[in-house]
Amino acid sequence: MREKRPSLPAPRPKSSRRPVSEARRRETTESHPVPMAQIEAAAAASGREANIIVLAHPSERLLGHRFRLARGTEIEIGRGPDCGMSFPDVSSISRLHARLSHRERGVVLEDLGSTNGTYVNDRRIAGPTTLRSGDRFQVGVVHFKFLHELDVEAAYHHAIFDLATRDGLTEIFNKRKFDEELEREFSRARRYARSLSLVAIDADHFKAVNDHYGHLAGDAVLKQIALRVSSLLRSEQIFARVGGEEFAILCPETDEGGAASLAEKLRRTIAAEPFRFADVATGVTCSFGVAQMTEAMERPTDLCVAADRALYVSKENGRNRVTPAPPDPLL
Image 1 (cartoon, rainbow, N blue to C red):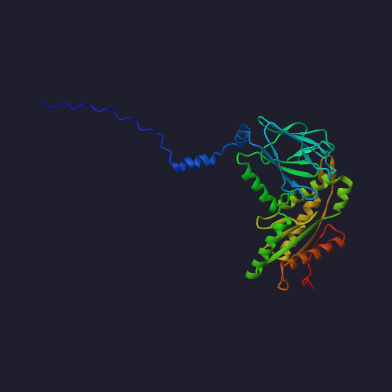
Image 2 (image 1 turned 135 degrees about the vertical axis):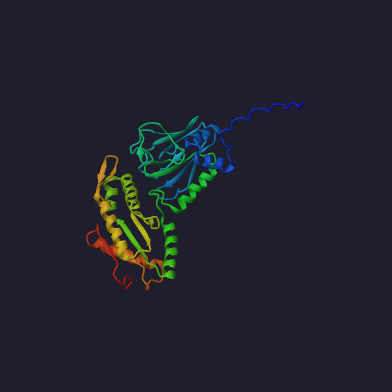
């Protein structure tokens, strides 16, 4: 007689779900980052301080200065001596201009009936406005960056690094960074016998804009010039603000003809539409000087001198024009 074998349990149907590998888990996490609002809420809930960094100031003496704002406190901005953020030498700021309040759910910026208004990311605010980390705000002609991160020290040092290489007003490269890139590209062009050109730009009659409409409008014009120019440049071209209303574009692998064509395109774009700020609309043009590196040039500054001389010719001949440097620009 055969021994009866116990019946085996019926096989379980295979699940369509596969175990998630560690690589896949990382990929999913990276492709679905934590929303910024959630990060900011966590920062606010943790009671961490907020930081306000000075990005642009008329005298540049306070660039990079940090103001701290603890949870449950507020600070006023103005020219008055009792303001926690006092700028007595900046006439475009009212005596009591604006207030920052660190509340339970975040930091709120409020204009206090100032003459020139308060702006967040280039928009004038009409009432109390909650700031997000990374926002830029403007009081008079002083520009700030707001930081409210879980790692506020890392965010602060990153902002300071940007400030060392970028212009606080226009956010393009500053003269220090431009000089470094010019030195590098000049050496590379000489070593490998490559073309290198420079476009010098100057806003025409810019002092009249400041005198007639005020420095707030003048700053807005400079920012809009930078935006219009940046939109037409390639990634390898180095664009910087090198003076008050002076800009420069370094063009690797580009001869004078190519740089002059770019300058003409930029000239037409800048002159095509008026620049707007609040209820002001004004036409502004720019003059251009173009120079190409030659064998006779021994130093990077020689290329700058050649472009500046060509720019001077554009100014002398009526402005709003492009002038290439002569064949022997240093003679």
